Length: 186
Image (cartoon, rainbow, N blue to C red; front, side, top):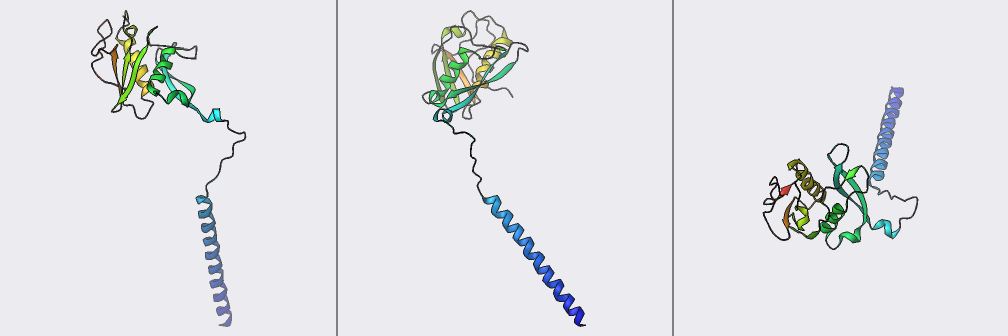
């Protein structure tokens, strides 16, 4: 009887110790999860590096003929005044990669770019459409290059194009008219 009591007390003490140990492990694990781990870079980040951001521009891949993204690192200060205009001007300049081709016609200028209700209104010079008999497929690539580039920005849902302030114009071969808002194809 006495041995049974001692065995019973030892079992109770053992159970209490196990419960305390498990509780300690849970407590320690919870504290470690709530800690904010600080990232310490291997080298100091310069002010210039802090100002850089990556934008995505879409050009045509010369091998496949499909649109392909090109990442470009630029200074954030360049985007402060009118980011939509700056991004389209970079698209007009063309790609850095030799495997990609620019789609916007030579000598095209962007007169203005502004956003209203998540639509970017782009006003191009007449070079955008002058003497461009490219066919519907190539013209769609030009439009999609612009749309895909601008809709990389969260606030942009579509674009509306005018030529020298005039609405409802089109490419000379009448394949694509600029009377509607263009949105990104899914």
